[in-house]
Every structure is written in C-alpha cells, then in structure tokens.
Amino acid sequence: MTKDEFLQRFQMTTLEMSSNQQRLLKRPTKLTQSAVLIALLEENNQLQVLLTKRAEHLKHHPGQISFPGGKVEPEDESHIDAALREADEEIGLSRLDCKVIGQLHPYQTISGFSITPVIAILNTTPKFSIDKNEVSEIFHVPFQHFLELDNHYSVDVQHKTLNQKVHFMPYKSHNIWGATAAILNDLSTHILNTSI
Image 1 (cartoon, helix red, strand yellow):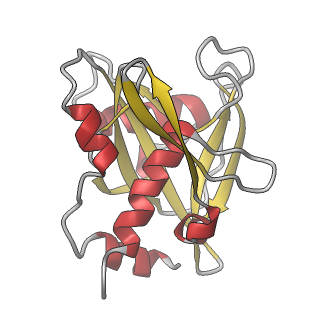
Image 2 (tube, rainbow, N blue to C red; image 1 turned 180 degrees about the horizontal axis):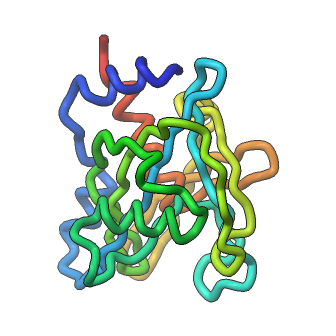
C-alpha cells in the first residue's frame, strides 16, 4: 500500500471504536493518559510502520515491541504533543519530520493506561538517534503485513473478572503483541473497511 492509498482510505470514513475499546471504556477507572506515535514512511512505493524494541533493563514491558510514546506530561499541550515529544526523546525523530494526519480512538489497557495513537507520515527517512536507556532497536514493517488477516492472531485471556482479547502479529523475529498489536489491528480494520 502506498502513502497516497493509505491517506485516501484513512480519511474516507469515520473511525469506529472496536468492541474491545467499547467494553474497556465502560469500566469506571482512573486511567493514566499516554500517547504513541504511529510513524509511517514510504520506501519504494510501499508504506512502512516504524516500531521500536524496548530496552531489556526497563521495569515495565522490557524487550517488547512498541511504538515510540509514553505518558502525557503536564507540559504537553495535547496527546499529539506528547507522542511527538516522546518520539524525539526515544529515537531522535524530529517533529519537523512528521506530518500528523490524525489519531485513533484511545485504547485502554488492563494495566490502567489510556493510549491515544497519533498517526504521522514521515516527510523523509530520518537519521535516528536511539536513547539506549529506553530503546534497544528501531525497525519497520511493511503496512501490508498488518492488512493481511492471516498475520493476525488472538487469544482470550481471563484477567480478574474481564475476558480480554490479546492480539499477536509476529513479523520475522519480532513478536508484536499486546496493546501495540491491538492498535495495529484497529488501524488495519479501519483501512480494510473503507471502500474506495
């Protein structure tokens, strides 16, 4: 899928909330606000999704595949501002290289976070500067991989009194799962359900 095809499909219809989001958002819980950046870049007319591998020494989710992002801080003006700031801090991605095109509905995790995915198209392939304290690797995956339903797996997991669907989308040696896979599933579903 090219950048132009993605933009046309993304902007053609209203975003729907997944059933998982609807169920989780009904639970009255104080949530920690956070934001992630879904950075998309085009190489050889194919859209790529930028992902990171979290550093192994981190206390929370060590070694997991994620988007750049983190908690919304008091100095952030918005979720978009938080996602861009975190991407700059974690991988040296300048906000000047990002053209924000929209966001998905917030995704609530069972650990009490509300994650707002912010989508941006990269103007160029940037030179990254990894903060090894937070990130051990940057890589990208063709967006087409996430559009192919044969690459989607999920299992139902009982968490306290809630039945939670956990998504998996392995790619080569990377196991993309949890909130990252769920967000990619929501984005893919939106793009696949948009007719042109």
